[in-house]
Length: 114
Length: 115
Image (cartoon, rainbow over all chains, first blue to last red; front, side):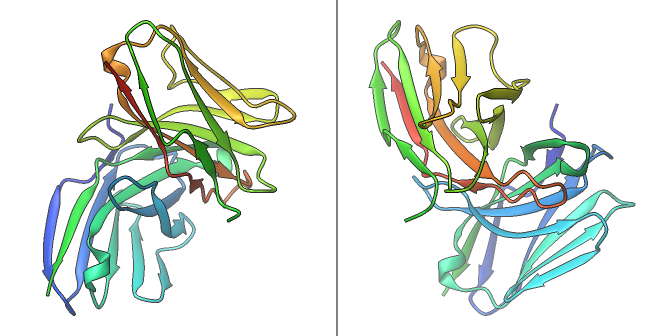
């Protein structure tokens, strides 16, 4: 049962433009959401997170938006850089209820073209 | 480097052998998680441990898999009598385990190949 879904397996964007990655979830008990970036043969690297009490969180070039009513979140990367080419995973947990395990989406492969 | 350490990075086993994967969390983190990534898939939760206790093992296969996080030393994920379907990347993560702040830091993973 896939509780976190990333419906776009890949995204190609030109350097300097905005990358928008989308994620949907089905479990209404999720209250903490994270984005990770992963290069081949490495572990996931934390990018940014958002609690369900917020609808936006920004950190440098990365902004995460949360729409609880739609059970949808998105990650915006602007401007996109060649080093951003990687697989991006959306993850969710119900940590305020003691459920700390992360449920991951299948990932979106981002390619930034020069 | 004070990050999550995993060893070995690569492990090759023949069917029926045992695999032991080790994880040392970030210093000061008392919560450890194990995830598995099969080819072309996302990460799947296996088990969540605190020192000397298994908190949630709902993602762990009932047979052949076990995990521990002793008072002293690294966390160990043990797979007995490995089969080809166990071939995957196994990632360990650690966190402080605070409500509302579940940022988990991941290690580089152990890539298990079963021949």
